[in-house]
Length: 265
Image (cartoon, rainbow, N blue to C red; front, side, top):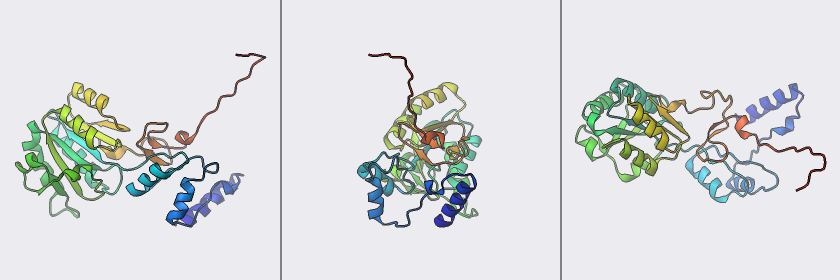
C-alpha cells in the first residue's frame, strides 16, 4: 500500500515538472533502519514519528536530528455543573464512540459532582447499551461507582490511551479539580469543557495547557482537514515550533535576507 502510494505521488510530481526523487520510500522497516534515520545528522532535517507511544518515545529519547513529538492522545471531556446534559451526552458519545482508535478520541470523562447523579446513568445507558454494535466499558472511580455499576478504575487507567471502546470516568468537585486532573494526566493533545457558564469556560481554556481546547464541542475535531490545513502531517503535542494539527505551512521554516549599503555594527 505504501509503495503504491509512493508511486502515485511520484507520478504526480513528474506531471508537475518536479523531480520525483523528492519523495522516497524506505522499505527496510527494521529497528536499525529507524535508528539510522534518527541519527542521520546532515541528511535529515526533521523526523515526524507516526505510530504508537513506543515509537514516539524512541524518537524523543534517541533522535539526534530534530523531531516533532506527535500523536499520543489522552483526551479529556469535562462535564461541568452548568452543562447542557443532552449536549454533553452527544459530545461524549461522539468523542468516544465514533472512532475510538484515533488519537483525538476521548479517553477520560470528568463529571462535576453536582450533575453526576443525573449524567452518569444517561452516559451508561447510551454508551453501554447491549444493542450497540460495540458497547463501551466504563472504568469508574469510587464516586462514580456509588452512582452506577461498572468496573472499578485503577490509577493507571487515567494515564492510558485505550484506543478502544473504553472510557475512564472520574467525578470532580469543581472546575479547578478538573483542570488539576488534566494537568497531571493529559498528554497535551485535546481537551473539552461542556458548560453554559462563560466564566468557567474562560478559566478552563486559559489554564488547560493542551494544543487544542474546546468549549461545547467534541475533541474529534482536532484534525488537519477539519482545521483547514489540508493534508495533515501529524498532530504536535509539543510547543515549538508547530503545535496541534500540522499541514504544509507548519513544516516550513524561514530565513532572513538583509540588503544593505555598507551598514556595520
